[in-house]
Length: 621
Image (cartoon, rainbow, N blue to C red):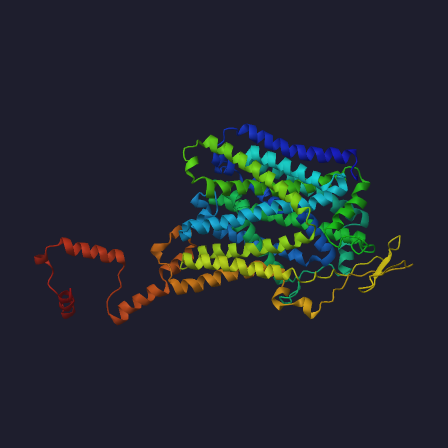
């Protein structure tokens, strides 16, 4: 075990503090109503909600994965933050003014009201629930591998400890426990990442030296303006990735929208996102800097290309902490506490939001719960959170048996599923002409197309790392050479001096398969969004568009509603009235008023026609 006494004390205090917050709000809200349990009575303050929103998406996988990305592939992914900020502003300016005044608990109630379709609402909820439960298992497994190296506990024990802790405080304390535990955990996460940045850069000579080392080893790249969609990363691809990732996470996902639904006004809800944007950029910058610090340390003795090592960049964080932070008592414990905090915050967010969906979208309408008191319903919701936590632990244990290959598939599939949901909501908000047939067809078709694309991308070889070196390793590593089959003879050669660069992957025509599978994964959500919108428009054009009487005005973006009222169909009718029939165009309401006035007036007192046209028109009547 790599933890000393002080490390164990810090880690234990961190986990106990999160549990204590849950116990406090659980005791305080024993008789809380469903609204208080799920949304804090819609009276929560923006800043703690923003911190909760920030750490709810920055998981332990983000800490390890993004740092590893900077190490192995360079800083281009950092530009993803530009897309994140742009999308957060759009969600604040467009989505919140429409969604928040509806006073919803479940975001997908909007889908039912906009398209007048119960089944489409439930389809979106089922998609979210399946993704959420699997995501919990995904969140539990990778960090447990890292924690095994630090704590000495087996993976099963780490999964169980994390799962039980966040399940208990989420179940007993409700959204307030989750939010305020997230506030504490955000501070722990920042401190843990800062430990790497400060200690590592100090040992090397400062952040300027770290930056210089990375620059001269081709890690610093921000303005790759190449428009090629087949490259892994570029400025445009990363901005698109960040933009659609944020729309999918903060705009159309219950786990995050539930945070700003917990405020009392539209303005407060918008400030939740503005605060979250600032916090997100800061925390992600620290994580990215930690990856550069780690590269500066390993630049001449890379652990990824060592024999029998796992060629996954996220593992370099663990190796760095074991080598460097263990030299100072307490720092390793602080980092491990940050990993625990990141896992706890992400899972508790999922548990709370999935319970809200289960109750609002499926259970609330059942006759058996019709006469239940609010306190009794609140108790049921606690049971649902607990059951979801137990299921998440089971899924985490199941994922641990599948290995790292499963993680790549899950990343691809989750990214593929967010695009259709974004497309459905953008269609609902901006295209009031689209009817239920168009929306549901576009949603279903885009899911299948995006999944097909995601599974096809999994057949492609992994992108090679930037150059890595083992020139200055103290002990030369044996080179393992294996002959071609069927002899399968292995020879071990130990050199006196050895240089290892990043493995260059040679891709044959058979491996490339269909060119569409080689498109950058950054575009997956964009394709899903476009598939959904285009198919929805085409099907609506065939089956007949909505009219203003079919849609509630408050469910549509204001400028789209103005265009909707002056649609092409209505303008064509008006043109026909004025230019062909030579009659003034009047609204339905005005016409009804005039007809009622004619019915109530005495025919003998009708005004004398002034011209020939009036006589002919009255004769026609």
